Length: 152
Image (tube, one colour):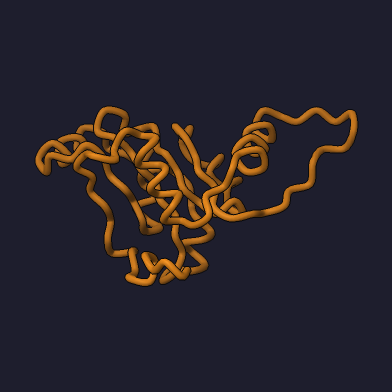
């Protein structure tokens, strides 16, 4: 695990933060433990978010395109996920039993209702984590003004 829990919590205490949102490739990897293809391939427009709360810094919540949901399995056990957009995954052949990882992937990327946009997914994650009305630090270096346009 990359997260230095004591240092992270001390910084969050210093800034009076209840939660953090990582938006850049290195910070998402630090918080959630996986390399995001979306952020690697689209460094100026990719949108993936890894969120944590001060009291549960080793249980990230991830918002990522459904296409890349499988890489979340490479990271730390996710507290929750929200997929964005649609991505078709073939179901198992009749009589084939899915592995634990395959069942997780199916539940999070096929069976779960995806968010319509990364911003909607971020808002949903903040609400599900109880951070909607809390002090949250966000890695704004990756956020671009066009992310918040309503016509997107």
